[in-house]
Length: 287
Ligand SMILES: C[S@@+](CC[C@H](N)C(=O)[O-])C[C@H]1O[C@@H](n2cnc3c(N)ncnc32)[C@H](O)[C@@H]1O
Image (cartoon, rainbow, N blue to C red; front, side, top):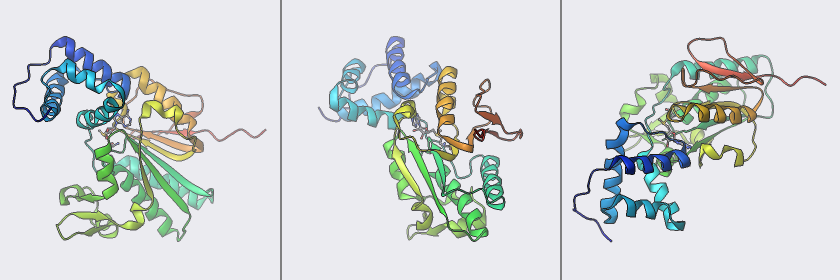
C-alpha cells in the first residue's frame, strides 16, 4: 500500500472507544471525548501515509506482531502530548537547587548525585535539571559524579532531546546568564546545549507503566511533571508508589502542582511549601 488521497470516514464512537482503550492500556494515556477529533486527525494522517482507509484494518496492523510493535511506536509518537519548556515550573527547579545546596553545605553528599526525569519529552526539563546541578557544584568548587536519566515513550522526542538543539524561542525561558553559560549558537541560529551538560544526561526509551521492570537504581531526585495528569487517578497513585521505592533515603520526588491531590505514602512526607508539590523520603531508621 502507498500514500492515498482517499477520504477517510469520521471515527465512530465505538472506534474511538476501541482506540482509547488501547492507548490507555498500553501507555496509561486517557483520552477525553474532546480529544476525539485530535485522535482522528492523527490516525487519518498516518493511515493515509500507509494507504489504509479503514480504522479497523489499521487497528489490526497496530496490534499484530512485530510490525504492529513498530507501528505502535510511530503512533504513540504522534498521539502523546509533548509540550514542554526549559524551567517550565521555575519554583520546582529552585527547590532542587536549595535541596542540593543544603546537602553540599551539610556535607551529606554520597558517591553520586542521581536524578531521574520521567516523561522528559524533548529534553528541556532534563537539561534544566543539569544546569541547576552544575551551578551548585561549580559554586561549591566540587566535581563529584552526577547524572540524569531521562525517560520517555516517544522516540522522536528522545531523538530531539539527544541532539540538544533548540530554537531561539525555547531559550527565552532561561535567564540570560543560563543561556550564556549553557548554550552555544549554531550557524543556523539554533542553540546547542554545551557538551558538558549533554554528557550528563542519558535519554532512554521506556514506558512508565513498566516501571517495576526497570533497573532498580536509587535516585536523589525524581522529577515527574505533566505526565501523571494524563492518567487515571488510581494509576497516578500506583506510579507514585513505585517512584517512592526508587528514592534514596532523604531523596525527593517532585510532581506538577495539583497533579495528584489525594495521595500519601508512609515512606514520604510532603514538603511544606505551597508553590511546589514535593515529597521527601524518610531517612532509614537506625537498627
Ligand atoms: C506534556 S509532556 C511533559 C514533559 C515534561 N515533563 C514537562 O513537564 O515539561 C509528557 C511527556 O510524557 C511522555 N509520556 C506519555 N506517556 C508516557 C508513558 N507511558 N511512559 C513514558 N513517557 C510517557 C510523552 O511522550 C511526553 O513527552
